[in-house]
Image (cartoon, rainbow, N blue to C red; front, side):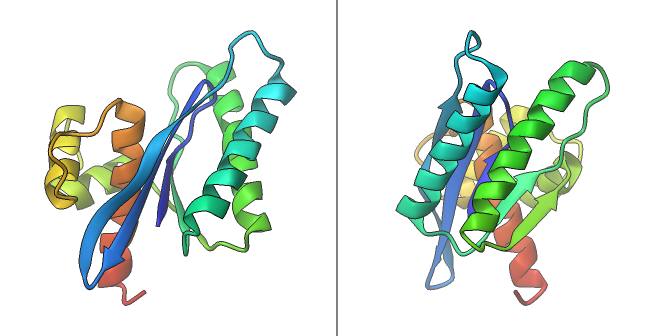
Length: 158
């Protein structure tokens, strides 16, 4: 499973594999774009990096965190555009896509839909048998999204 924490300046990603019923972390990291680059150039970079990631990791599916914005509309629009190029890369690879709200991810991973970032990071590390909580937040969130999909998908018989 490829989990994505959508972002425009920083997009987190994380792979979670199920091996003999055990969830394990695969590759994870950030796609960071240059704030001085044009919007099309930044979107092209995100698309290119996600296409490469999909080719390298060969996930069976992709899951993203749903966008919830209350304040900055400009940021919301840019992040929505970044999510669009991620979904384009998924469609090009014929990957099924799922989306989860932040409270759904938190509830699935920690047991509380109101969990704070450190709680999510702690539980991601525990569930994936990592020596330390993943950092930065974007990577932890991406792994949490992939975990959420792995857990909910298994419960749904996927």
